[in-house]
Every structure is written in structure tokens, then in C-alpha cells.
Length: 100
Image 1 (cartoon, one colour):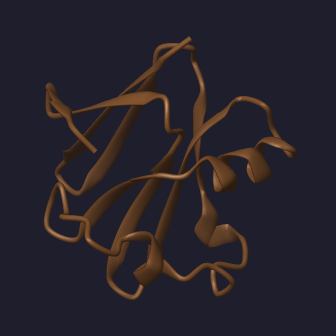
Image 2 (tube, rainbow, N blue to C red):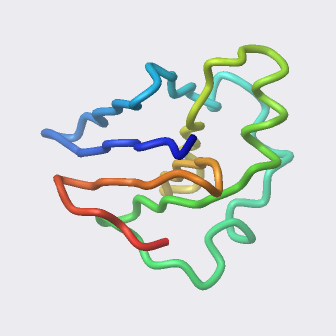
């Protein structure tokens, strides 16, 4: 089933909603130095200031070993924010679908 994820930045706050009641986790509570953020956002354009949305099944699968309800991962590192989602997800930002 294709996941539908709605995101919006309201007053500096990230809003997350998934059609299957999945959750987003803040990866900053874990070790983020093992992830090369520049590699993840290579050839990507930000959706809002320095906020990037990246499709990456590997990261999602690894964190689902801990909690199967994870639909997205949030990483904030080096003044860049990244949201990782599954490849088969449709993402809406401020009501508009994003083509990633």
C-alpha cells in the first residue's frame, strides 16, 4: 500500500501525518555521525530553506527493526534538516504533492 505523508512547517515546527498512523522519529537522539548527509542530499533541492526530503528504504528498514510503525526519520545536522521516507511514499508539503 502506498503511504501518504503530509508535512508542513508551521512557525518553525514540523507537522507530520501518515495515512497508516505511522510515526516520525528524531534521529538526533542517536548517533548521526555515521550518516553522510551530503551524500543523501546530493543533487536534491530543498523544499523549504534548508529542509530536504529524501527517499531511502535502507534507513527506514534499519529503524523499523526497533519499531515497525516508523514511516519517516528526521535528521538535523550541519544546519541542514532531512526527512527520510520510503520509496513508495507520496509526500505533500503545504497541501501540494512533491515529486521526488
